[in-house]
Image (cartoon, rainbow, N blue to C red; front, side, top):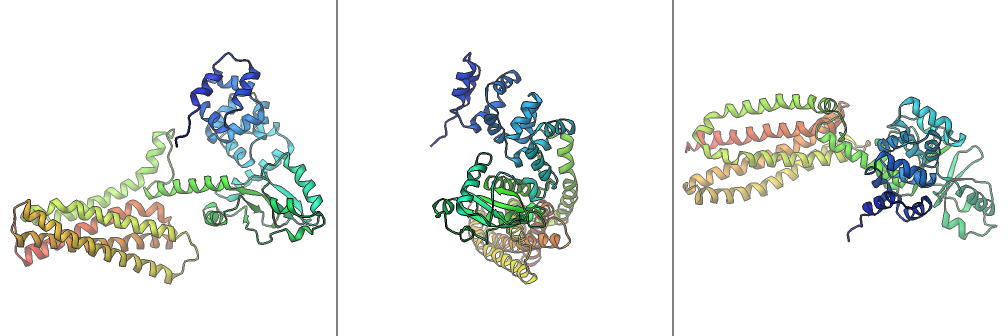
Amino acid sequence: METKDYTQEIIDIIRSNTSPAVMSSRLEDYHANDLAEVLKKLTVQERCKLYRILDKDMLSDILEYTEADEAAEYLKEMEPRKAAAILSGMETDSLAEVLRMLDKGKKRLLIDLMDDDVRHDIEVIASFDEDEIGSRMTTNCIIIQKNVTVKEAMSSLICQAAKNDNISTIFVVSSQQKFFGAIDLKDLIIARQDHPLEELVVTSYPYVYAEEEIDECIERLKDYSEDSVPVLDNDNRLLGVITSSSIIELVDDEMGEDYAKLAGLTAEEDLKEPLKESMKKRMPWLLILLALGMVVSSVVGMFETVVTQLPIIMCFQSLILDMAGNVGTQSLAVTIRVLMDESLTGKQKAELVFKEMRIGLCNGGLLGLMSFVLIGLYIFAIKGKTLAFSYAVSACIGVALLLAMLISSAVGTCIPLLFKKIKVDPAVASGPLITTINDLVAVVSYYGLSWLFLIEFFHMAG
């Protein structure tokens, strides 16, 4: 079922002559995400009109669904006090991300205009590097002391719920603010007033430390499948939480970075990135690959006599190269995924190499056999060659395919393992390099076998 697009409806409301009260009421019927999509389609004057009509809570919700760089631009269009009030209503992790997009002067001005509590939370989050999990946490959570009664816990929940809407999980701390455990809201609601609170607390609840690297703990965060995961400082005090929505964003960011790395880029690009910056990201690996490509071309040149005597084999060169590249890419993807486990032993790595080689051998054998039958038939029926010549060539292609796929699977596994060993990011270094090396492997296998068997052994030509 298609999702309805409300864009034009919202734009028509904003551009109408309806009174502010009626316009505000009508716009409240739309989801904040729909309103966020509309902002970029409005003129500056129309957006300023919207800033005056909508209350700060609704504007805060809208900016939550806006990209951080776009939200920063919208804030520049507002009066500073209103901008600060809107930011104060946002989740602290989103707020911190937007502030990072502002210049120092504007950022300092807005922070000074915020409430003391919000300012303190922002300073805590800003104290962590962008690649640390603490930089993505929010302080929007319910925290209660472990030594209170169920009745007191409910009262504390009601008081905090006015400012914090992440109430599905309540986090429990000791008198020193050290993380003790968590309580499901449902369990607290149905508990009797005289029931000991500690019996409701799940003390084995997962947590992460604020200074942990995002890429090191992202897999654990995904495995927990919790709405919120507490974030602790090095003294085990509860600082905030990572919400499920933040985890989804982190996973999305990590996937985007991995795709960029597999393409030989040092980071993701966006549409607004300057030409010079995009070139800087791509050029280093392109130069390396150009040099390797020249090596591949030189190797092909070494087999010039083979091509001269057996021009038909040129028709199937791309088949061997493409299949070798495909197998190498598959092995690379599996290896990169496995290497996320930092506890991988040497024995497990060796098992991975041999497993991928077995897969390459079996798949190569099946595809090589298919190629032998079908290509031989093609050369005989379409090209009009003799049956012996046709199947001699197709046999050479089949064996070359098997050999290329076997070696490519080994290359696709061993190269990232090697880079990991020498402390080079296997994702950023492996992708294009493996493709080019596999081209070299395929060329040597194919033309080498053609020269050895078809020309030197069977003395075929034509």
